[in-house]
Image (tube, rainbow over all chains, first blue to last red; front, side, top):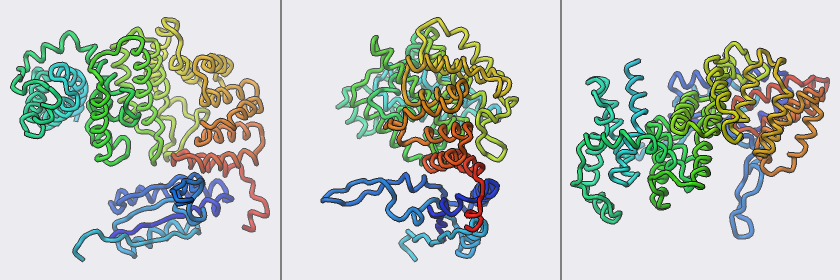
Amino acid sequence: MKYMIMMFGGIGAATRDRPAEWIAGMHELLMKLDTELKESGECVASDSLADPSQAKTVRFTGGAPVPTDGPFAEVKESLAGYWIVEADEERALAIASQVVGYTEYPMEVRRIMDHSAQP
Amino acid sequence: MTGQHRIEDLLRECTPQVLAALVRRYGQFDACEDAVQEALLAATLQWPGEGIPERPRSWLLTVAGRALVDEWRTDSARRRRETAAALDPTDHVPAADLAADLTGADRDDTLALLFLCCHPALSPPSQLALTLRAVGGLTTTQIAAAFLVPEATIAKRIVRAKQRIRDAGARFELPAQPQRTERLGVVLQVLYLIFNEGYTTSSGPALQRADLTAEAIRLTRLLQHLLPDEAEVAGLLALMLLTDARRAARTNADGRIAPLADQHRDLWDTDAIGEGQAILTRTLGTGPVGPYQLQAAIAALHDEAPAAGATDWPQILALYDVLTTVAPGPVVTLSRAVALAHVHGPRAGLALLGTLDTDERMAHTHRLEAVRAHLLEQAGDTTAARDAYLRAARMTANLPEQRYLELRGARLHQPGPANLAD
């Protein structure tokens, strides 16, 4: 089973007034966890996305697709980064809990759809 | 393991020579390039067990030539060949004759190959990929790993690049003047891009990928060997060496960025610095002074300072003044502002940065805000500095850089009662 563990843009605003040591601790935690998940082979893919303020949204406006500056959703709901892990739900939730336990900011854990034709 | 390395080095040295000999003989750059890749693969599989053949280049030529003929014998390829008005497939030249081709024209062949791979009709990513494969002798897998993209992406990029070269009617020959100087400029740009891609990755978790910088230096060294009288080629090689010399000090043990001023200078590679300085000394004054020589001279001044405080900033500023007249641009202005701040104070630097605020070319890079943040911090304006750091952090697409900027910003934060209540 694959799960996507998602972090959202709101974490930037939620953590911006934390002291430098706290920020450094968060960076360390994320790097350490990322390394662990890759070394254990659980991590299928992981990436951080550039800040949502840099995003563009393409909308169908006036009969044509038109790109505009800014993310589609509120910045705080915009995807900021993810891990895709090969794991059961319990393990995926445990991974997310490690991060949320430190940042106190929510993460979403979602099952990835199976592509194979046979159930 | 060292034997494996020796084989790899040898193969990559032979790659451009073997490919050039094939192209000269058969035309059809794209088919020849595929054939050489097949020969390299065969060598990688056979040489470690059977030993390196006595004449490795002839061996590669024979195997690549055979691969080429095999390819031509397939039906679809034959049709393509006929429409492309290529050579008779039975005209299979024995390896000894081909090897004879290598002796005289080697130099120009490798150059012609570089010019072809850096053809102006290609997009920069295609130029990079094709140069690394056809001249550098890297496999598609290695290139994909270096650029952190799927292998299929690089494979398609190379196929498209070769198609474009064919469509553009590009010839396998050294361009004549005045195009040659212009085309050499593109070649240098591609080599510098490969270097920078390795030195500061444009995206991704690792700040530097040493294999790409090493490859860029190797190819520039090769080019400098082929064109010893081109001052800018030597300038680029010196610039790469003098910059790469600081690689080990650029990140801390935990993978964080260490800015130039905070680097442990005893980690700098003194051999690379020495070589870069020697090249620069030999080169300056022998030809027209260009942007690569000037940037190398600036890098040399940084490398010569035993401590950040001992940097000869007035001299660096003077070099940036020359660079501004030779090759003006927003990035040069940005660097000049830093030098200006060191010589005449942060406010002078900030004033110069102000001239870039309306520059469209700076609108999508974090560098302007990052430099502004540093200068504001030096000027003692911590609130504005913090905002600038956080703005820069939001704009960068490089993760270590983002973390560095976030942390610099956070350090300037003085928690007040309002924040504690948060």
